[in-house]
Image (cartoon, rainbow, N blue to C red; front, side):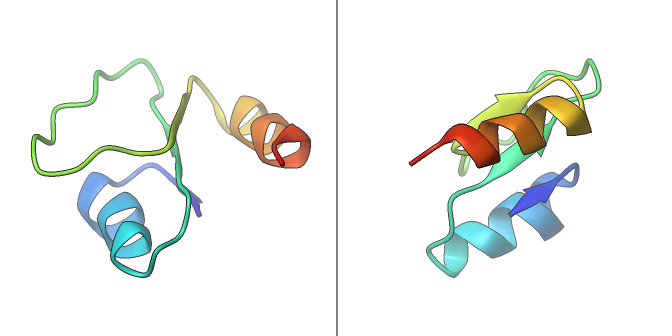
Amino acid sequence: MVGDSAAADVGGALKLGLRTAWVTRGRPWTEPAFAPTHLAPDTASAIAHVLTSP
């Protein structure tokens, strides 16, 4: 799952057991209850990570 919303995108995907890539857009990760699998500065970087990850 690639997204930019902590609760809706990352939290929801993690509950389903999916790996996640959070598009930071310059923002720090501040959610203490969970964390994304990968942090990416922009959508292109997130997609590149997804395409090159095993």
